[in-house]
Image 1 (cartoon, rainbow, N blue to C red):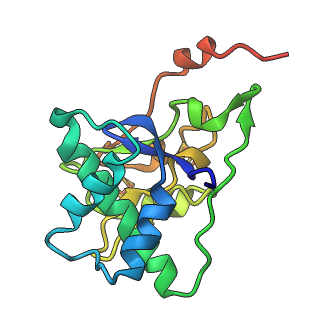
Image 2 (cartoon, helix red, strand yellow):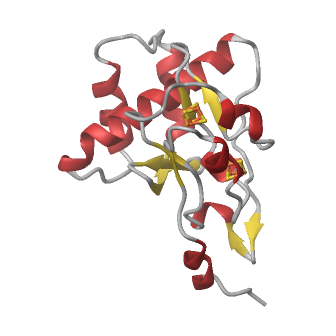
Image 3 (cartoon, rainbow, N blue to C red):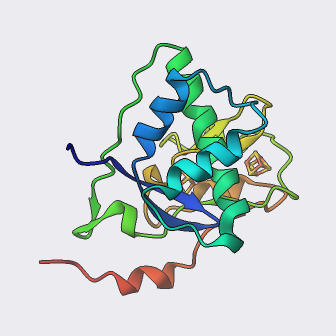
Length: 172
Ligand code: SF4
Ligand code: SF4
């Protein structure tokens, strides 16, 4: 049996590692599931639970993040682009996905102006099918950078304090 894919998602502001996501998305896509299907949330959560632990109180947050990610997968597939697992590299010798440095958008403050999207050179932000800006690739974010926060007039972008980076000493 081949090894399952492994991918980190930003769920509720925390990097969360999930096994078998690419396989699940491919299976659902091949079965014809649309991002708008009413039962997609349940199908995604049930599929992820086959290989991962999801605490019951966290199901709504997982379901929201999984639906966003599946919509993105669906769009990429539909446009003929290859959906490949990214290699996010390392930072100070640590896998980038272990460093909790990425922006989070407060939806109640964001007006979808797109300033962050235009400022960031790393393709961290995308617009969804409804035109809302979201953090699609958190681990492409440059560790220590704050540019997008400084251009967000409604102050909708949150980033960690620089002090958390002191916890990551250079690995020899
Ligand atoms: S700059 Fe701020 S308000 Fe504008 S889209 Fe980005 S997060 Fe939303
Ligand atoms: S902090 Fe910098 S690299 Fe990260 S999303 Fe914002 S502009 Fe892009």
